[in-house]
Image (cartoon, rainbow, N blue to C red):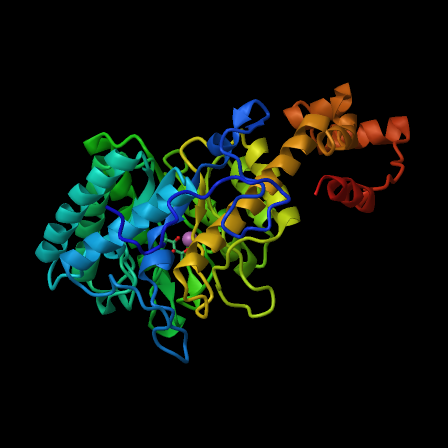
Length: 436
Ligand code: XUL
Ligand code: CO
């Protein structure tokens, strides 16, 4: 029985690019083949629980703007929220969803109560997943909203907070494992500092390193086959977050011996906050061998906040999926809409329309990226640009066979005098624009 939250809508159809019905897909077609693979299997869309079903619509100057019949803190509320959430996943044809523990269960007064509530809801979600075929892309623990975490979770000066967080992650890994989740994410919401005046940086990094090692050890202990993912973000809520960006996370993983165990969940908005482009973060992640998944939500380019808006810029998506395709596509990861409505978008249909637009935009981006791959539009000029390195002497300079003195002799004897060549950036930009 439907909750009726979305009226009589039960499935969003594909109606083609000419459609002017906002409740239809214009570009996303699950079965369309792109580079020989179904669009659905490329994009692996996921809807997040928190922004869509939990966020009340508050901002720093105003309180709740949304009215949802499930807002409350009882198990009944949590079940109604799940009913509506699965109606939306199904209506959109989204194959995945994801949650924080705090999104799906009522908040208890103790660890025991939280765990009991989580257990009930995991069973309930398991039934809904079974009935609808919707799968869990990832689970995660909310280690940042409750006031106990105001000074951090793993990096808290109080070992009791560290313990509470560790115990909570254990229950969330168990829950993710039970529901067949394909990844487990850690976003270090409050793992950072507001001021160095009260922060022992070295100790906090060591705490975080041990915490993450325990997560990996426990994953293997219970036989969880999914990937452990860190989600980089430079600041907000704290002034400085330890998982600043992909490069910083990689250095951290190396230092604590985890570079082969942990990958990254790259979020577009976080990349922007770090002063990078999305494709920079994706390119670096795949280069370092730690690409995992993406959170597909952008920031406002002017406000400087993490505004978590739905994607609506096809050229940006094309360059992002170009990197995903270069990485060989997703393995355990997917495209998660960690995106939220604007607080004035209070109608139930706004939730559907926002996701439809995001999915269409990603579909267009993927198609453009695939065509660029197919045509070698960027890879052919790239190969040509570095073609000098196939020369014998050039190879020896990198193989370790030659040192500075050998190279100096070579340059002298051959009168090596490099001829500058154009980087042709505008030409390449024009090529990309042909595809988008
Ligand atoms: C916060 C953020 C989180 C993570 C999961 O900016 O992106 O929602 O994705 O904790
Ligand atoms: Co995110």
